[in-house]
Amino acid sequence: MFLAAFVGVALTGCVKEDGAKVGDGRQEITFEVAKYKPTQARAEVAYPTNQSFGTYAYYENSETPGVHSTYIDNAEVVYKIADGNGYWAAKDETYFWPTQGHLDFISYAPYNADAANAAVPQISDSDVQQTLRYQEFKVDAANPVDLLYSDKAMQQTANTVNYGFTGVPTLFHHALAKLNFLVKVFRLDNKNESPDAVTKWEVTVHKITINGIYDTGSVTLKTVNKHDAGATVVDWQNTITTVPYNVWSNTSSTVSKSWEVDQVLTTTARTYGAGSAQPAQNYFILPQALAVGAQSITIEYSITTTAPGGQSATVLQEPVTKEFVEFPAVPAWEMGKNITYTIDIDPAGDEIHFAPAVVDWENVDGVISI
Image (cartoon, rainbow, N blue to C red; front, top):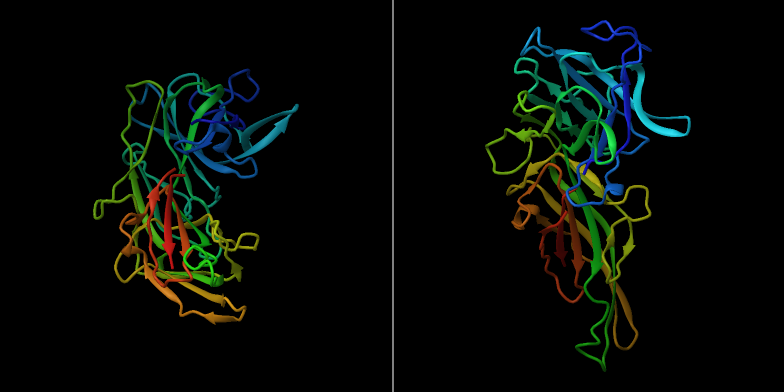
């Protein structure tokens, strides 16, 4: 689960608390970095080398027990190559391990130099960094990003070897949910029912729109400090109790998102808009519970029917709209869930069905039958 590479982070000048200098032979802080994917192979969870991330570290020593002062303050970490070796390092500074005490680490992505930006998790100092909060973050409907936050690596005193790599364990989790839409046709003809008088169909989807999507919200995550357990990693838990789902609280602000491509369907499910500039896949969205009168999907499509005698006619069908809440197998778009809906159109019928099932970011597969 922890794949990754080295991250070197460093402090120019003197290192806090103990007066160590750059180049004095002390050990540089490195990180092992991965994204959380429950059952994927290591090669599929590596943190992308073309993206940076931000990190914080907090220092405690025996002289001031219980007090954790800021040691690394929102440093940007980037991937570098030196002497043929790739590693992660702070872009502008160099940080070394202190000779006494320990460090706690919290990282996030994507990096933002403005620590007050809503895309940067706010970390509470009043409870020894046990609270992490995204406050009034607004998802850009046209260009959503993958928000990530790491487990808290606690009581770290040196680079350690884990899973074949050396450094502070930095395991990222996804703060948002992700949507994907596949399309397929249930049948192309009726030869099984009428072998002597075959009717053929060609189905084209023209547009998919998701409506009433909450795009602004907040979430508060809590962890429990374990400063008596030696070096360890602890995860964060959602504090929202108003619904039994791992979602954010949201405002009344909603948006719609459309994908518009004329796509002729096959009996194999394919990503809607595959090959276009913006296919309907990997669409990051605010985690939210699904409710009556809220989130819905509208499908616009046409059917070309070829009669047994060879005559053809194309009919633009009435747009079909369904509320996502009608399909209780997926009652919420939860944090870290990768949700895939398959739109299955039966040209001989007119009914839409959703049959979602949870698999593995974590993935959720569903079926929309028309």
